[in-house]
Structures are given as structure tokens and as C-alpha cells.
Length: 415
Picture 1 (spheres, rainbow, N blue to C red):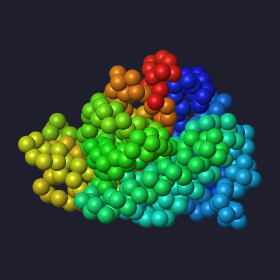
Picture 2 (cartoon, rainbow, N blue to C red):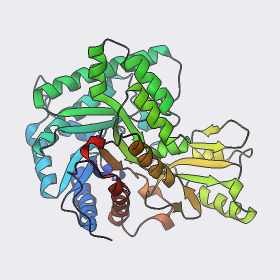
Picture 3 (cartoon, rainbow, N blue to C red):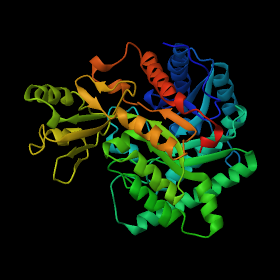
Picture 4 (cartoon, rainbow, N blue to C red):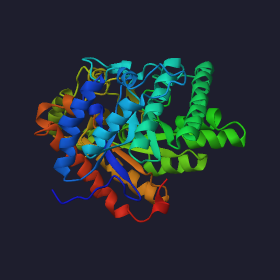
């Protein structure tokens, strides 16, 4: 591996990886997983410091909070201890993953990861709590800005106006809370909604429509406030599953004035059966079945020439449908290592990563925060797993670092 430099304080980019790949539903386990894995990733890279996207579940966040204060302030001593420990181990907490609320490593997660929705008060409370403790972390690590990614309102597309209005109301309240937090602490925290296939805002077009209609539809003061504290988390895997154009998405977001707060760099499975021989199709079909596992939801889209795309909530449903068996081009929401252009005999959407970087560069709109998010390492077929989790993740981070290097020009290209 080539000698790499510290990337956590570059003028243009902060990069790291998301720790939702590690099990941990309490603070003690979070410490243990960081020490066992994140420190090992940094050392494997040979970097003095490395960005870490923290995942803190509802129960872990509660451990870091005290409810003795009427203001609900973060427990300064506990958060300062975490910040000091991370700094002493060369880890920089620059973003949080606020999408999974409960235990993201239960035996079965599936649809549970989308609860509570943004129409539920519990989602607002959790996100505000994350912001309060994150402000303390940022202060203790001399950072001015951080991001928190969150779900795109909830699961399932809907036309229920009441649901949209309730979710928007919660997000307006959230922006108010984040504005107040910045005034008190000097730390600006953005919450970034993350489009995901099958969700209420499953792709970029409905995401932009929601921002325009429900979040930016007030007076100029409200629009500016919401634009400062609410943005989009661009998950490249999700866009790849939906066959979205990177350039089209960037242009759509720019035109609407909706910023990309952070990028989750991820890659999905892609199998174009129409380009395979009969023998290759059979082998690919057998290999694809090995990705059907019980923990996570793996939304699948089948694209067939001359027909509308077929959406399946989960990979097993698609595999059981005889009308699409070994037909068309399949994209599967299964996060595979971004450093690999193929997943064994199957293809990936790795090219979408390069397309997005180039599209954002050409638009003079490269975001600052980049986070590798391959949370599925532990459920990959055995033959695709790395010799160790640290080695596999380090290879991914090194790949992202290499892809971004040619675009490091000047700070005016940052979001």
C-alpha cells in the first residue's frame, strides 16, 4: 500500500468510514469496537489521524446524556472523555450516522431500520440528542461543522399529505433547534436526509420536491435557516440501484438550492444478464442467491428493455419471481466493498462513484465530507470477506483517497 498522508484536515475533503459496520448498542461496546477496528484501520493506512463516522444508537446516545439539566444538555464529562479517547487514538469524529435508531446488528433488522419515522416525535428527540452531544464532540476536537445523516422520512412511498406535513413540521423544529445550538456553542451541525429505494423519498427527484414544497416554501428567513441546517446525504449506492444520473442529480440539487451535506461512498450489486452467455447466467444466478441473507433489506430493481423497471422490496422476492429470472439488468441494494469493481462473478455499481465525483467537480460543487459506508461486511458471502475487517475497510478508504486526490485543487471547490 502506498504511503498516505493525514486526510482529516485537508482544505477540500474530510474522509473516513462509518462505524455502523460494527455491532454495538451501548457505550462500552462502542469504545471496544473503535479500539479493535477503527484504530486498526488507521494503523493499516499508516495515517496519524483518520476520520470516523460514528454510529450511536438511541440507547448509546442516552448513556452520553444527562436528563438532570432542564436544557437536556449533553453530559460534558462523558462526551469529553470520548473525545479525548478518540483524539489520543488518532480518530476524528466528523460525522454521525443518525439513520439506525435501534440495534443495527440484530439477527433481523429489515424494515425496523426505518423506525421511528420523521412523523414520530421519537425521531426528532433522538436527532436533537445526537446534535447536542455532537456539538460537544466537535468543540473538544476543534471542529466547527459536522453532519448527521438521517432517513428519508420513512419507509414506503406515500401520497398522504398529513404525513408529509407532520414530517416537515418536525424538520422545521429541528432546524430551529440546530440554529439555537449553533448560537450557544459556535458549532454548526447539519442534518442530511438520505434518499433510499423503497422509502418515502426513494430517489433524488422526490427529495428535491419535498425540500422545495415543504422546507423552502416560507419567507426568506425561514428558507435560509432551513438551507443552513437541512441538506442531503448523497448515498452513491442508492442512486446506483435506481439508475440515477450523477450529473442529473447534481444539476437538480443545484437548481433547487438544496446542498449535499455529506456523501456516503458505497457500491451496490449489478448483474446484466443480457450481456452474459447461458453458462455465465447460470453461474451468476447461483452466486446472486448467496447474497440473500436474513438481516438487512436488499431492495432490488430489475430493468428490462421496453418495460417499466420492476421494484422488489427484498432480494428473495425478486429471486422467487419467475418473470424476471435471469432477465434484464438487476441492481441490488447490498453494500459491497467500494474498492472492488466486481463481487466475485457479479458486477457492481462502482463506476457510479467515479461518475458522481466527476459530475460534482464539473459543476464546481464537490462536497467536503466523504464517508465510506459498507455496513454489510459481516454478511457478505464468506469468499468475498477480507482477511480482517480492518484490512478490508482500509483498502476501501485508501481507494477513496486515491480517487479524490486528482480533484484536490482549492477550497473554492468545497460545498
